[in-house]
Image 1: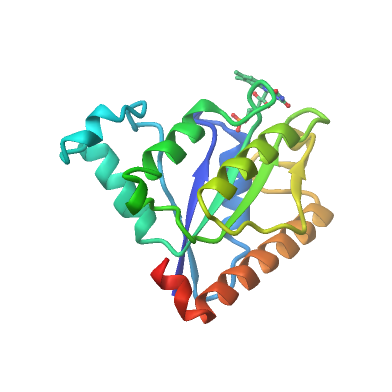
Image 2: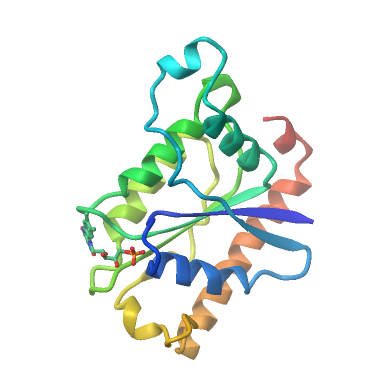
Length: 191
Ligand code: FNR
């Protein structure tokens, strides 16, 4: 069983990001399980809180949840042409202590979305920039930019556009391939 941590870059109740993530979670094959990990309760990262080896419980609990997962799926809106602060904060919290970063070596995949035509390109690529530094292999193709997201969801939050579902299935398939490749390389587990 492979566990996929799902992180969304929006805290609001009706977030399109959460709806897209819920649809995508259904597209993984048997043997893959999605776990939605909340990031809204994390204190803003403050290195002082780590320096005495007694970090806040919310940091520890978040770090343990990510550590227990095999891969990470990010679904995010774009805020001011970049990654929403709440998601960047989660990356920062998980990245410390540096020698024990919870992200190190974990395969990742990014979906950005926007109610406009923009599709969150800026957020998608700023997030990629951080994931390079965090040593996370990221699905390169296909790239997932979901534009006009509101028009793709029905009143129950289900994607109502067959082409979008097919596209997201191909995206999940590429992610599963990446995860399986990394699982087949024994040294992967020791990074
Ligand atoms: C936005 N929004 C936005 N949209 C976009 O395409 N590019 C952008 O740079 C921004 N910037 C931005 C900043 C802030 C602070 C907010 C609150 C919103 C609009 C955003 O895409 C829209 O609110 C989405 O619905 C947010 O995603 P969720 O919450 O539905 O997942």
